[in-house]
Picture (cartoon, rainbow over the protein chains, first blue to last red):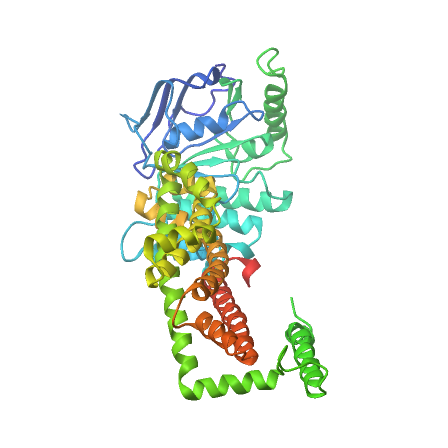
Length: 262
Length: 254
């Protein structure tokens, strides 16, 4: 792993008591094929980490390991110091498609994740308010647009009060304008709620716009790490932004062989 | 989507036209009442049999038979489908055997059923139960197996227990398919009922028509046939209503 920039301090003060996520020598094989190979990663509480790479580089598998949907073939994953076994209760995964239950209303879908208490509907309503969809609470998911469905999925993840939010290309299926809106919304909510976020994406610009730190993956390994210490909200036409974006794009396109001129 | 004004009338045009011309031809004497009595005389005999209390009795008996067969066979099919859909080992143990038995037309078992149960009520019930079982079993199994795996994964990520997973994701996901099975089972149920009641029976619509045949009462025979058509249509409409209500989340059913 090559650290390209080390300008921001390594730790960031988290307002919530979020657990750190640590991966040590994590590997995952499906049959003979190694999808992940010796991944070492430490996610600081409250940070927004982005992972970019071509499709099939293992980035989605990495998230599935962190949320406990799969178990690692080798190495260890620790959440707040304790090794992860079974489903990770601290983490929530947001999928590329919203995965809403079509037979439940928007509110019921969000309430699914809220705590098992009498006021779970109230919690769900508050989460819907955060994403600006409280007046759609009674509708069926089928009549919402793709962007609105992803906002409901985001509200569901927020309602669960998880401290780690794993986003698996959540905006991949949206049109360009909706993507920009969603990116802004995610950034706003993250700044307010201060959860730890891991964003997997193939969109380099999205990674630079949102993340504190960007990892580049190739063939199941992390091949580069870039810190983006630009002020928020980020100006996408600034020289610094474009330089970072091009540098990252180089890594993604050319891989470890000739590291993107960086 | 707004339907044009005639869309609710259109399905009725053909039946009304058919019955009207049938009445006209009968009245004109073009059709012998021995072959085909006029619609009005069929209705008349219906009213007559209602007044004597025969028709309500036969209707009630047929309905009781059909309903108890549907409930028992449907419940068994649903439970078996559920069991085999949720458990891999149960499916590999039972499913191929069930598929094998399914390929025997259940009406072909009539001789055997009569040998086993005689010609009493249990033989009829057995036939309806076996007829209803398979469509519900197959569609329940298929419905459960085809629930979107991403939704199940989502449920696991959000920490749903096995019961919640079943109640909130698997059962509602399988419901459209189960209801298709129910509609199909209703068709099989009527068919089996007719056959079972014509074999040997001393009540029910089937008995009424067979009895009328012996006395050359073509109008009563026709009445029986029309009743089967009406009951079948009624059952189908009720299932459609059930579908519309249970699957109201699905834009296809609205």
